[in-house]
Length: 403
View 1: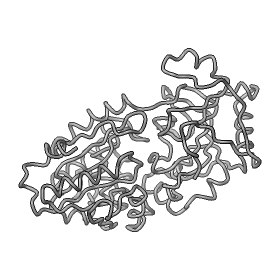
View 2: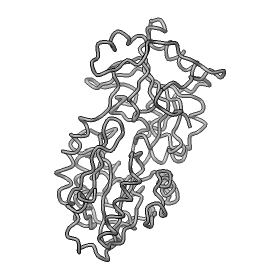
View 3: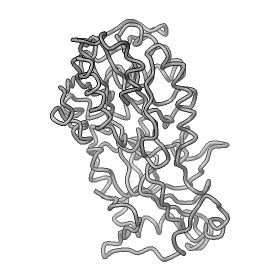
């Protein structure tokens, strides 16, 4: 990583005595704490003065304290990083974009001599194109804070995601002292596969190449169609929509796969929220069924603020809730059509980042034996329920899925 940064941050003397804002977002990036610390250490080796800026739009309840708490949940604290964290929702207005709306930028970052844009590059959960989620998006949605994120999401309804991202990010690179970008690429197992330094003026041209590479590594469900998908947990640390639409489908429509989109899942049942999401259940509206404990764990203000800012109001709508897994699954089987319960095609996952093990119903048994890339770990067995009617966890390599 030191070599990647050295290659894009100029000569060894250019950063001496200069302040450098390092951006950190709210997604569950596997090695975000050690990567951030490595960035801090590199800047110190150049005798710069680094500090960390939360770059996460409206997340954390759209408060400075909430965003600091999110970072702490990732292990990013001033003590652990050896650098100050300057969290604020204040922004400056940089200029007017060509499309006629204001461009906003984090005030703390604007006071730095340089900005290092650090983020993971991956497919977006709602938009598809050459640019999706990554360094470019971080420069407008992340560093725009709540005010900028709201403006840009509104503008996207009038234009298109690609145009708005390019328009704003170009301005930010030109006027906001962006030093370079550091792109994190993850493999199908949510492991850091590559960290790539990118010069500021090359971010727009290089990021599409990085996105294409990541798409080749993306995890997926073993089957393209199912009557039911059981998801143990959703959360902002898992995906912007709680569960990644690149995995579950429904990228353009909350409750159905559009023509040509896979997978096509008839009903989704959500069993829990991650502890790291702090009650933000953005994306729960993509599910048709959920457990009562999910509804009770939701922070309505945080969820609504996030979904309103993102222009995805339906993402906060509540599905039908049930007191037990047994009851929810019974209803899902009833809605699967005129088939016996043992014929219902169902998959069960921990979350959309954890797909190394997928529990599949007996309806997939014969098809699974024909898949060369799938290893069958055991023969079909009946689901087990506890005294409350909730599923007994049985993902062999995973800790308990529910917080």
